[in-house]
Length: 286
Image (cartoon, rainbow, N blue to C red; front, side, top):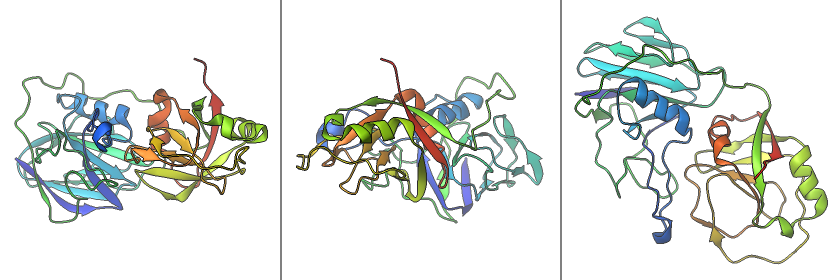
């Protein structure tokens, strides 16, 4: 079984749940940016939650089935046609052999996930099939003409036809953060600005992280740090004072102070923020 890429849109990659536990040898976790949507897509088609699937940025994907397939699309909702007929996100879809699935651009959110029953069966690298854009690990970014093998179907079967999912916000997002580990490097007014004023996602954003425009986060200390470990959700602030929010393919280490870290429960929301969208940070309770 296989799927052929006919169109890949702005960015389409193979993802799974990544390579956790390898930061000590300089390898980041990577994996799906919106893990909740990724897991849901796999559950809908009866796969293990970690089976490899496609992460589609701003739509534009078209694929052709090599054989009869069962698929599901979750995440950023987009207009979709299966075998020429309109189809819905967050539902189990049948894709007959030789037919196509076409995804338009979502009107909200950024990343959609296409899971195929059996999983995308490309060769793993360091135990994962995820494409890490920063490290250059995993399968290359997908392009028209690529044929992806599909694994054997699992023993379990889909148990629902559709999943109720709350709508993604198309307005301002609020992300919970824990201050630190270097919040003491910043002036009090910078901490106040971080927690009270809005920031805007710029177009200089990708799976590595998103640069934010907004109030300048001024330092109280002028020195430089030695490189320190970083995590997904870290809000790192370069000398210019405009923060970068790290996402799935973030570097393992960084030399700029991290003023705060987005809580893991809100990382999926952050992964769906699109350029031009406003963000606010609120201090999360321990």
